[in-house]
Length: 312
Image (cartoon, rainbow, N blue to C red; front, side, top):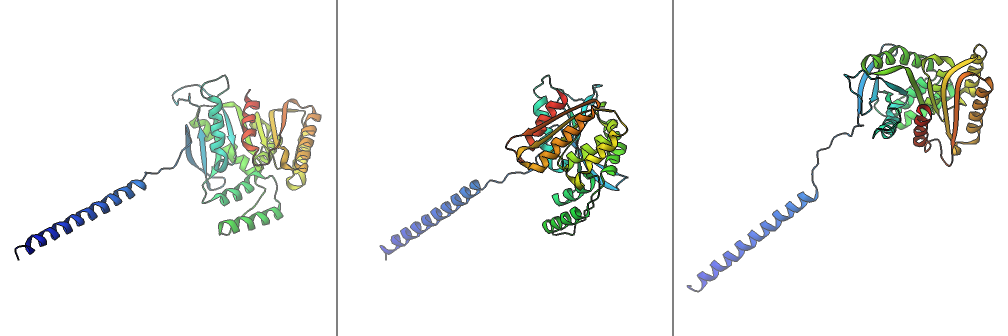
């Protein structure tokens, strides 16, 4: 009996030590797992030197998201004014364009610093952006395009979408009567050095604005413009302008990718030739084709070249 008691004690001690070891291993394992899956505080990334504001349009009874990229030297208390570029399709392209402007302007060089104003929409998804850009950036209504676009966007979004093309004149009116006064009242922008820039439908819109209301801007960038819209109606709009005008005071840059297709490139070269044949006073036209680039891949290089061409 005396020999049994120490044995019991030893067994209890061994079991106790094993329990402590198991607890320690489990705790260590939990600690390692916690370290293997760290928890980070996440926040949305922002575009440097950029402000965003919601502008309610009385003309549309709709909220637009306006993004404003400021030069690094901009100060609200300064009297210095900067050239301004108004850009369409801000929901998709603004961060890229703003950073191109930032790259060219910082560190400080001889290249002019530019305030970039992106015109976007309050959206639930890019399907909304696509529907509204079709509405706002096209000069005429094309029912077949509306139908095809509506069906595609409804399928992608899982919602019934509305697409009505042909609102370019109304959208331009919004820019002139609501957006530009808002920007000029809140930022130090030049009233004589304004650029309008857009890509694809946005390029179509820029050429429309140039031929319909050339006095609104003095520089235009039309990137890969949808020049075949409505059977090439832009050619007829330009012809109407040429019928009563001999001057077109603007600096225009047009670009395209060599892989965009023969019809697109042929029509763009036709537009360039048509403009040059007019001998418009004070019109400067630059046209560049980017080799081995498509409609999409051409965009970054084309916007970089647009800044250099228009502001050099």
